[in-house]
Amino acid sequence: MSLKKGDFVTFDYTAKIKESDEVFDTTIEEVAKTAKLKNQGDKYESRLVVLGEGWVLKSIDDALLKLKVGETSLIEIAPENAFGKRNNELVKTVSLTSLTEKGIRPVAGMRLQSGGKTVMVRSVGAGRVVLDYNHSLAGRTLIYEVTLKSVLTEIKERILGLIHRRIPTVEASKFLVHVTAKAINVHMPPETLNTEGIQQIKRGISQEIFKFFPEIQSVNYLEAFEAPTKITKPTVPDTKTV
Image (tube, rainbow, N blue to C red; front, top):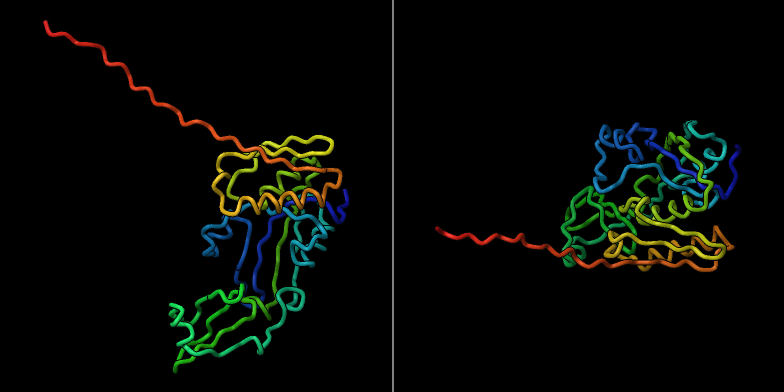
């Protein structure tokens, strides 16, 4: 079966910097452990992508279109097709005081958040701090090894894939999805009730469902609150002294 844009697929990958052979990202836990990646909060599992939607780098998207389930492709991606070439104009020097006044004690190698972007502290000295606004992978040639794991064809598994993509901390099997001609009903497990930003997450899932399944007119999220289990104290029989 040849793939086409709009298909739902899952894939594994390992990404390296060509110049250093350093692994900087992967979906495979054993590879992450060997490479001593520090993304300790990440869940290592195959990723969902809707082909042609720009969810991954175009070179990866194009490679996946040519694969069959179980096949692997090795992709080399030049900087201009990955995270761009380095731009020296994005390296700025600021005063150390401007950061310490915000409670920031910069050291070389530290990453800061500025204007919604991640900034690298390149050096600190003589009351000045050099900040690099380039992406950390800018100017690097990347090597991706990608393996096509599955093609999702059933509407329920596609819906569950969209849900899990946005709520990866909860197992997809815990969501119950019921599909009718024009509606999707999603029974939310208790684990999601306190998820930060859950309303925005549900809105995002709904928008994707409407986009990929234009026949659907409504998405309904059903949440159940269960009464706490009452603990019955065991009855202690009366004892009499003879």
